[in-house]
Image 1 (tube, rainbow, N blue to C red):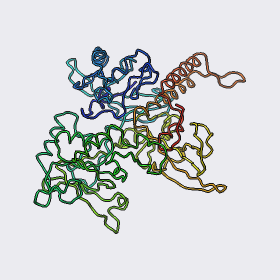
Image 2 (image 1 turned 135 degrees about the horizontal axis):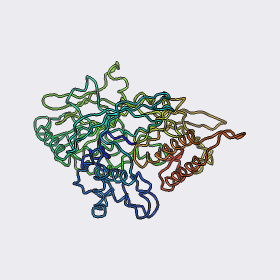
Image 3 (image 1 turned 60 degrees about the vertical axis):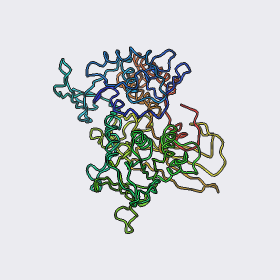
Image 4 (image 1 turned 120 degrees about the horizontal axis):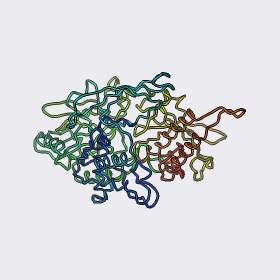
Length: 553
């Protein structure tokens, strides 16, 4: 049973029309691998219609979704136009992808309860309601009248031995808090709205409230108006990665005269000229993890905006406050290196105020640890990521509770020596100069997700060790763990229900259990064949900036 707070794909329906997938979509069905943004291995089957559904909806489709109990009818109506509306979108919009998800749900007849909110999840021992123990899940359903009007809330309690949390991150924006961030002076980009009218209204507010900036901190501040500064409609965005670039381009497109992108990292300065530097630094080997570098399409848009003279980058700065002053908005920024001791430092760092015509926009990601329902069921590290087992993404403190989706993180330690190394085969020990050791999260739960490094000397050869974060924020990444989690749950159910004691042979699986395990292996084989299955973290290290190309899936 899948429980959905709104409707299938509603988070994608909430995307603004200008927001597109940065991972490109290609119809590769007849060549084996699934589309990069596919979640269904059957999309890769020759003649399948799944990938086509990415582009089934015209750009103007509102992607409104379906009402509770009516998903099949609505989704089937949507599918009727798949062959007609094949737009060939390389970077699908949110509503297009939501339409695709509804297609997958209908194709597989997935049991889904829409408009149902999870109130609480508690681990319970064995009882009459749940003999083997598991989880008590309290839900609240929005029932509808025959006319379709929402009329009342109904509470219900469910019991399950296993729970997979796929709640995502969109509903938990990492917005600033504290007395230094005044009410109404800042907003998270996820709260800016999804409609064209809302974004045009935001741009009009900026244009009707030009601000005077004369502090010399923006690239175009030398356009003096004769009064010691220049007045323009301006926006200040904190966070210069994908969401920041996307938001900046959307505002410039609607007539805002200038946008300043602020980020704590220093390497974004290289992005002015189309550079590809990333957080691993200039000495890092191999390509950057796509989760850590600006995507090609965003880099292209950023360069276009910079060349127009209407966008500035301000690297190595952190925002420590936001306020409303004299009808304008102001972001207070300091050098990123001084943030750790702010404001208690004996030496007060230089504060650069940045004026904005509209509230300061924070494109600072999401904080899933703010979710009260799951907060106590997992252990969180210092960066706010859930700690899970590396073999099946299970909570380290709540057996039977699994995490799936963009919040998924793993850590592994890379050891390297100064000796020359041969190309490493992923998962093997052929390269003696470089080896990988997965981190045991059950014994190192309090470790920070930040990179750590230390050096040792053995036999005259120096070695170093660095903890590498493996990020699963893209669909093509976290989809590789779907079958892993499902396979773990299914195999446990088989062993729980289909084992018997044999004389002298201990425990053995009965005939029905073996048949089900055989079907399970076929499912896992399909995901492997389609490139949608990863069971070893070693293979993920090749895209985490380690420079060791992997060759296994």
